Every structure is written in structure tokens, then in C-alpha cells.
Length: 231
Length: 231
Image (cartoon, rainbow over all chains, first blue to last red; front, side, top):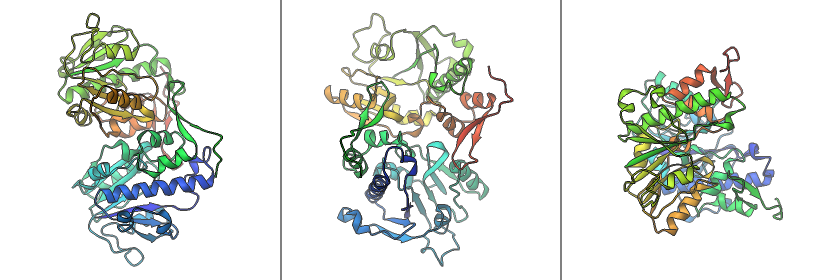
């Protein structure tokens, strides 16, 4: 199975702009990408980054066994088009890569992803398997049906269910909090600090930026140590 | 195993006050409770509601096989105290019920709970099993260790991990989006409409109130038909 990780390298994570500078958002988005790559390799697969611009993978300083399993390709088209060109049955092989029979697509901001959570998705046998995200999104999916195409706009989880029905593909939904948690907004940073693995980069970067958990008023939020300079 | 469902009947779901009237919040909270009870019975267990005030279970109009499995008790103490009095090893048996060797606690606002999701939690064998909620909460847990006590204030998931460590209890975390999604805030209503089972009451009530999904701007939100009168 091929596992694609789309990565929009320019101006990442704009919905975090109230709490992170542009440089910090870039650091965090790359830390999350590295964590996702490690989780995919930990689950026994070889991730392929589909980036909007060329990436220097050496800059990521990935662990050796991870770096050896990661490949990258560039596609500056919108997410939906770049993914569809790489799904089973795709006719756009001229521009895209060779297309295997099963393709998984894992978002690069799933900072809580673990090998176990990914294995639950990647070992399904359904034509289409989806790990939904909060807000009706599609955070990760596996496509084994040649007629299925993605549409990431709007409530993509519901759209993908309908697309699967329309092409006669069976669909399985994978119930995972870790895969449902994409990191888009400031409240999502709480999840990174609570559930991020100790070996992961994203929680380490957030702590280096001065963030910590704050539950003094009975609800959990993040608070930032203002003595730590921003980047 | 006993499965407790704490239910605070007075002024429920105040964080939904920007979108629902007090009467609607009461209707929704009772619909979610009924859905949770059905899911627990579907998972093969007999739920016991621990309510802050006496409930007339007949008012809930539960399906026959569910109604036959549900019992209720009243405890007007704060959540943490009411639960601790009912955990294995509790010494407060005078006021609480008889205490079995394994007790599960499932929050009444887990509107996405399904028998499958609950079974993944309830069939664990660890001393303590937790399904965390967003924001560091503890949405459902199983306690099989006589020295473990809950503390629902603040980042209870982290506190519960520490309490388990301190009493030498093994802990397992159950990775479920359905169990992680408690319905507290307006954005959570999106999840009820996207993922609520067709047979469930909570999505039906929300639709009767005039709510539907709106993804016209590319992100998913709820919108309310203003021609539907509020209650």
C-alpha cells in the first residue's frame, strides 16, 4: 500500500495565527509532519510526501530508519486534485506517480497519530476506509476502489460516504480520537500537550515556545510563558 | 460490571445557551442520556443512572428492552463524590449502592456513543481503562482497582493517569472519537448531525429544532432555520 502525506508548505496553519508567529507555525507544521512520518513508518509503511513545493528532507533530520523509508514528490495543484491523480484507477499517470492498487492518504497535521491508531486504519479491508476528523472532515483514508475520488471541500466525510455509495464501494469508518484530531486551532494545541507522545516533536516544540497546560479555572486551556521570546 | 451514568438534571448544558433555550437544552440533554442508555444496553450491560434529582424513567419512553435494563438512583453530591462512593473498594456503602468489583462510568452527553465503541472500552482488562475526552477530560472509564478514585476537576485525564500510577494500577487508554466527543459547545452540535446514528434521539431533536449542517464557506457549521419556533 502507498501512503501519501499531502503537505502545503506555504503559510501553514493560518488559523493558529492568534497564538503563533509565521515562523513558529512553520516550525510546528514541520514538526507535526515529522511525527506523522514516524508514525507511518512505525506502522510498517513507507510514506510519500506530496508537497506543494520541493522539500529538503535532510532538513527534517529524521531518524535513520524513518529517513530511509520516506520519499517525496511535488504537486502544486489543490489538495483534491493532487490526491485524485494518485488514487487507484487514476488516468492522470502522466503527471502523477505510478499508482498501486491501494492508496492511503494521511493528513500531515495529525499530531496525535500513533502506529497503533494508523494500523487500525491501514489494516481494514473495505473498499474505502475513513478516519473522520472533527467538523465533518476526512483526516485519513484508504482507497482500494478504482472509481472512488476524493473531494476535500466542506463536509468531506459526508461527501466521501456519498461518493463511495455512488460508485458501489463498501465503506468502513475507523473510530479513532487520535486520527480525528487535526491541529488547526488554538484549542487543538491542548490535545498536543495532553496526548502527544513523549518522543514526538510537536509537543516538544510547543513547550520550547513556552506553552503549557493551564486548568486553574477548572477547564483546560493553554498558557504561554511570555518570558520565552517568539521566533 | 456495573455501568454508572451520572446525570446532572438541573440547568443542563449551559455552554449551549448561545444557541438553545433552557427548555431545548433540557430536551437535548435527556435525548443524549436516552441515546447513551441505549448504547450501553446494546453493548450488553445494564446502566444505572446516578441523577442529582429523582427522574421519572417512564417519561423517557425508552424502548422496552432498554427500559427493562435501566435503573436509577439519586445522589445530589458533586460528580466526583457521587462516583467515588460507588467505585470498587469504596467505604461509603452506607449511602451508596452495593459496590461490585468492576465499575464503569459513562458520561450522559456522549451523543455519538455506539455499542461497538463502548464494547472496546468495557472489554478491556486493565485495572483502569479511560476513554479521554477533548480538552483533557475523562468521558468514560472502567475501574477494577480498589484504591483508585476519580477527580473530575480540570485536566482529569492527566490526573487520573497520575492517580492510577500512585496506587499502582495499570492503565489503558481507549482511542475512540465517538467516546471522546462530549457535547458541550455549539461546535459540538456539528458532530451530532454528522455522526449521530439514524436511530438516535439527539440528532432528531436538533433537526426538529431547525438545525442543519452548513458548509457553504468550505468549513462545516450548524445553521438554524429561524422559521422553526423555539421552545
